[in-house]
Image (cartoon, rainbow, N blue to C red; front, side, top):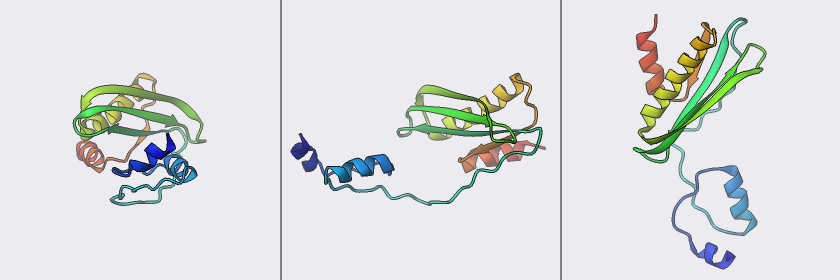
Length: 133
């Protein structure tokens, strides 16, 4: 079994530390996918009385099966709620926008009218910023 896996040298892993450790454990070679840009990010809590929601969405390729989710935290970094939603055929931008939209909807329904929405999609951020006050 390990011999057959070692012969499969084509393709890339998804830059996951766990995958890399498993491959190294079995002394298998890997070809890491190149990340376009790597940025260090530090989570900051929202101001008192606000809820911060971090959203993310992904699809295996565009269009393909995808999903999105969000995590809601208060000013003390305590998790208030979270959500995940699987989707069928979606584009990456579409699922990122759906994640932001669902987070806004969920916040409003829970009476959280002062939110800080964070998304790793610059297109979603620009779209929402151009529509806000």
